Length: 569
Image 1 (cartoon, rainbow, N blue to C red):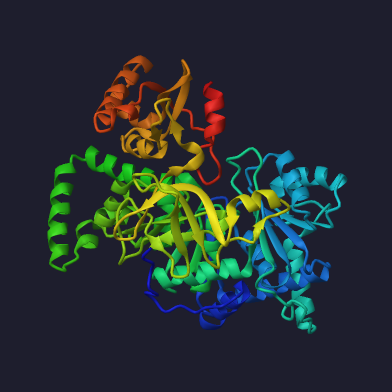
Image 2 (cartoon, helix red, strand yellow):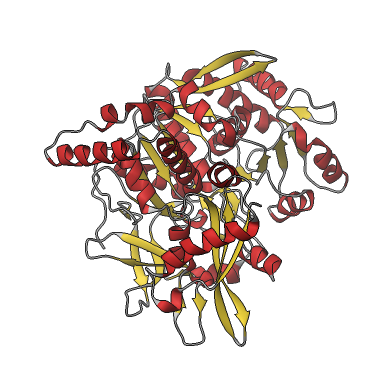
């Protein structure tokens, strides 16, 4: 299969620490982080340079080692914030093994995860204080450390540890600096997103993660002048590896205030780059077009697009000038967006490209550290997930007559295995190849296309296979569709192809006013019939459920299909 050449020069290191320290040496005065401070209506900003970050890093790392946590397992739970990043990077760079936990887990799942990973210490936000008090009563965990100074005296406080570490450093303590890192030892244990009843604990090494940083840098152009918004939850591999990638490149990182404030944050920080899930990009794109439609400028936009395409063929790029008003609504500086976790609608990716924003699709899994393939500015095919990264091999196992089969991959980024789950590991790691469980095909130009999850395929009685993700992309194109799920509903020893659509309530009210559910369903059915007319007959949707209630999802916005279908049944 065709792979990326090394399009860009990139430094290659075996450990995350080497990447971080190289960035600190190269970009000491760049802002590593900008942190917003709110006090009533007053807002101030704290800027932390790479040199300042180094001091905090070494101070916290030294303090953690002083607590006898060297080579121990440290769990971290909380929202995206500087203290989370600092704890994570300090542990990776010279303390021990990180265990990032999903902040959305219920208390019993948090406790179970800590037990399964055999955690020695946990660093947490104050909102988990009561949960940690309960866990502390019946736990062998050595240290409980709160990120907030507002925590009561029950726990150690992170800021106090940083200050203690500074004193130790000033007195010549070099234990953190001298900590030996074996690149092939476990660096991080990350639980999969929980779409199955029992999530797996993925073991990643420094080699795994560092190789992914190197390979992404070979394929994508990232500048030390970029401003990145940390939007994806950092406990997720895609979020945490992207963070390490941007730190390795001297990028400035800022924190999102929440979904409702994304547009404001893009303007506020002049964000130029970020990593996200398709749901966010698709929502942004629909919002842009809804506003264009509202202003009666749909025809003008179409003319501008056609003109822009003609000029691009002549080597003249005026996209960012001609669509300046749209770009200004997104902060004016966005140039590059990486989308992952699931497939993005190709019309959305093309739409952003038309505006002058490079929106590339990446593909990978927690088990692959995570990126296996991606598009870039020189290799784009809308609807694909690009080409494999330079050191990654991808093949299609046991393809059918359409060339669709299971995607398997080999490379230095493939996990060590699942923690204490040898049988599960042997199911997916065979002769150096990782069996992803995803289905796809490779086209004549070497681009990889995802058709769905192996376990999601709907098999009808006549033997026909239906990939629900393919139809969901078409449904999600509808302007009022916030999300959708296509599934097989059992009936008379077969399956009836069904769709559940979550509609955007605000859009419906603005477009149709106080419409009844019956009338709304009739309108949506007409659109579904139009979609059916473009598909083979066996793919026709014959049953429809509509609601404005969001579906049950993981923190990376993947629908938990099993739970949703169980609820419907």
